[in-house]
Image 1 (cartoon, rainbow, N blue to C red):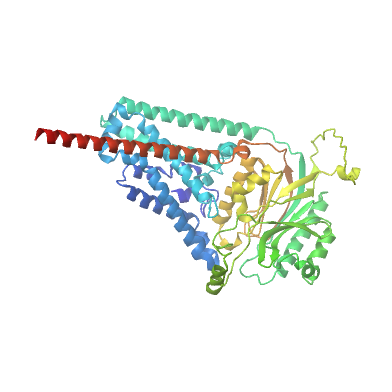
Image 2 (image 1 turned 90 degrees about the vertical axis):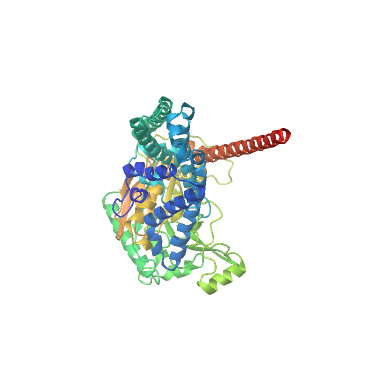
Length: 575
């Protein structure tokens, strides 16, 4: 059910309604599990199956399929099994033979609300554990099914994606407990206290949902007026990454698409400020490749082409940071209007077991990998955040404040240069835009637009493209920052600070898009300031409860031991 709710080949943007009901069978199972072992095994199996059914396209990553799909499925199953152990903790205290007491005894009034809260909290913790860190994989989450409910997901600027997951999971748990209450009431086995406890938790969920909807509606209808624009051309080459032996054909195609779009813009009285090609569109590594691209492709060399347009470019390729030992980054490179490369950003979060292999920086491991699979290390992760300042243009409705600058600089900028509204862009590459831990620091340090470049074309599936899109769209909402996705085959789009698609291109087609990218005034959201406070709170709650239960268990053991000793003493005296 959860695999059907997540964006898939049938429902491209997923099904929020299916996601609200998807975890009901799992909650029902927890009320019937008989042991921790059973809970761990079946929860691990469940999470592994969700991963395999929703991310099956990882098997198309050529020779790395055994790692991308196999290892990630195994890892997801292990995390799910650990979550299963934690989830079962309060359920274990009241096994199946005590279910009658739970619903019939007034002393169990708080247990039903507690186990609902526990289930939701631990599931949020599970999604956070699987989505964070070096092995993090934020696909297959409940929140990714809710892009269609755009008003509802506006709470992401407070809670991140985890608030959406919490409310969805809570709905399923409440519905299941309501079914149990109804059955017990029909059999006269439900106390008034149990019904009252259930009623209270229903009221809590309803209040949270109404508050979330009202907040989302207020943010959705609130006017957001751009202060600047960045007229951008996005080029979608739709090149096959496995068959591309050289990049001459790809460059010539991209140049043709760029020229066509520049002509269209000129005819419409518009002028481009930036041109963006996708991740990995250049085969040869910079900075040495500058000479190569000065003369290639022979029909229309790249560097002279950039000079001819007179417009800055962002291009995806590789950049050699160090020659000995050799360190190469998956880079987004900025070329100025004169065709000079001004700098590069290295992808921070590499795809584990595909772009980078564990322990590959150790010489012995690197030599073994080179011998067995033909790869020694892979990419080197970027070690810093890089921003590109690109000349843009003010919004017609923007009223520039009266500003006087008294500069101590040796060479103050020319007066006309001061009038140019620069746009500070960051360029998270592919996988990067799925991780708040990458995008949040970029926004906190001044990024006004996320200019993502991606190549997911190897997947050959629509579900892969749309899943990546809906996951990344949350970054725009969380940080109230425009997100632009320039991809090789899709889903290329411009997403505003509410998560709405302003412009897009069809999947798996050669295309280009001219778009006026809106730049909004920077605002500090709760999520920008505090990050993943909700899963951290969940982790604290779970830890405190488990410590309390351990202390209570030890105390009960001591009491039982003392009682046994006292009974033996009395028996001895009696003899």
